[in-house]
Amino acid sequence: MHEMGIVSSILTSAEEAATREGATRITEIRITVGELTEIVDFALQFAFEALTPGTIAEGATLTVTRLGAKSRCLECQTEYEHDRFEMLCPECGSFACELLSGKELEINSIEVDPDTSPAPVSDPPAEPSQQG
View 1 (spheres, helix red, strand yellow):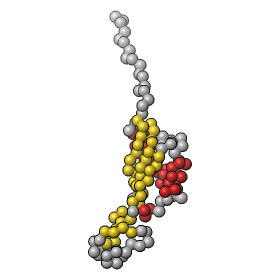
View 2 (cartoon, one colour):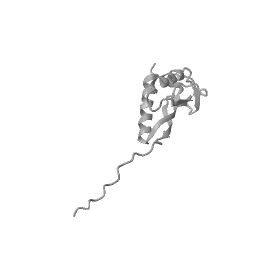
View 3 (cartoon, helix red, strand yellow):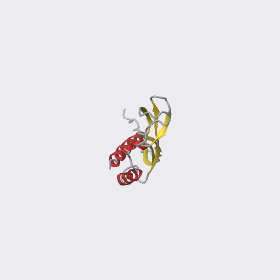
View 4 (tube, helix red, strand yellow):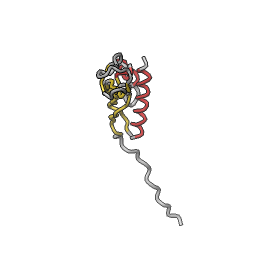
């Protein structure tokens, strides 16, 4: 189950970005996953739920968008969608192809609650003394 490591990396990146922007809570993380990555949605959600308690992403939603596999035939330049096992060009039957999509794993966006806590109150500047 390599999804634990993947989600851990996603959370680290999301937390760093949210903290850098002054957010105190992540409400949603949206990612795109290619069909050829062998990442299982159920395992991703399980890992997300297991790793977020106690973090600024606790209670957040992980939204996964799947991207299908697409290739371009190097013989006839036809672009076509396919699955993991059948990559032959549907036009000329060539095995020679260039993968265009299907191996993606990227964070698309992070929704956060901005830090709404009051700014810390600093001591007023000391008045100059009247000693003379």
